[in-house]
Length: 441
Image (tube, rainbow, N blue to C red; front, side):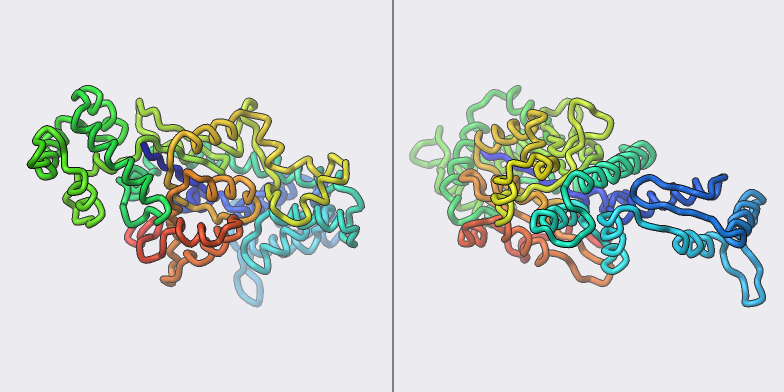
């Protein structure tokens, strides 16, 4: 048999219009702080930042904002024109804001300069600064870990609201559903795995030629197909590859030739994966909307789930291949390892179940919205370089200006390999790839 793993990252949620980026989170965090200030407070402090309205003039301005909003007025008229109170209030808020966390300040500056930030990568960079005794505002990891815990708390609150308010069944996109459950394409399979692919093709042909109708119907049902509608296609195809010298046996060579020619003559049921695993690196349940009812396909929430104490959220860094990691782990100081993902994975059986899946049969990898960055490097290296991995196919993001991030994904994928020759064989070239969501969708 041959399986498929769908790597689901934050770009997957963003492709469905969910405000789940770290930039969205930071904006949401400030919205909560501003709301608290607009209610009745003159001082706010939570360990990440503080706002203190102390001067009589500033307090007078603050009271004016509260009055405007409580009266439902949306514009202030000035001699220089009209300005919206919220825009004016944003500047007032920022002028009175003080960062209490150097790490949180760095994240915000990264957003201001690049319009995005990878909090987990930033965390590891700061952990290494502490290890190297660089001047960064922290002398030990304990306070940095506390700051990260605060951010994690606010992040889970933000994402919980998104999950509750935004994730509905009708949000699922048919173009993504079709991609997840599409048949294998021979041209996607690596050269080194051609033998494994042929074994799968022969086994599936024999299965559909000899298995009873009830069993085949059960298999097709997982993909939203029925044996009744597919039966005639199967029988017609079996006749087309019949062995003249042995009528009861298919001509394997003819079958393999048809698959490799890729002319659409082979019914999809001969090329469907045996099992599909959605490996969700997000914390939301958006991926769960793509599992058909009564299907035995699974979502592995490898980084935890919101509101599930039995599968707690994992938020940190996972790059044991980094040159500094070995030296940090040799310190005999557990505070440096508090937020290392590969250790946190042991809190549940998610990682063990994934290992069992990749060891069970050859598999193809689809990448949907995962940047394949270094923060998940240990896990991705395990998946990408495993002997059973036969193909890695990125579904890239198509930007409004027509550009895309295919090359960026490939650059990141390359960092998860030790054997670059294997990487070049397994990664599907761009001419055979396509956007996760086409422009018309």
